Image (cartoon, rainbow, N blue to C red; front, top):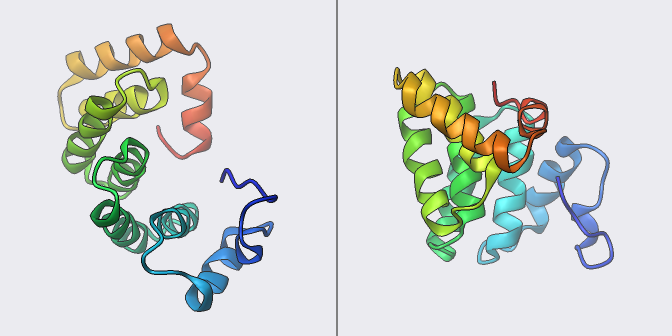
Length: 144
């Protein structure tokens, strides 16, 4: 999780996602898309995919053009075994930010899992061309 401790509220600065999730239960501003998205990331880190998706849904209601949030929700769908929904969100994220190698790689994995190995291979190759270490970075985020 990427949190700048100098500007983040105290409840966001902790060493483990479960600490954040517990703190968010009492401190979350429901109208703050950043806080809702960050809590979604914490749920994603804990493999609580439905809770993560719900938070990303809320964040997208507040900021419907956030490529980052579409990408994170796409990853939540991918990790929860819903690759078709992942492809939709990751494609939308790439429409909004077409140069993101991490999102392109994730979409390649999702496309492969939907049975579209050719398109998946093209996405993965394009992502690696932009960022040669993308596969290792994505694997750390549970994208395989």
